Image (spheres, helix red, strand yellow):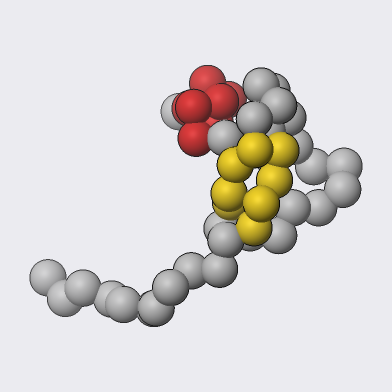
Length: 47
């Protein structure tokens, strides 16, 4: 299987909407939309 290398992904600093911890996400946070850290995201993820 071929590995795709798109280079370094730009990360944006954000504050988790649940726990309030600072985290980094691979998208630009938008006002009015919740952002979750890795741990809180797992709790909110839909299966």
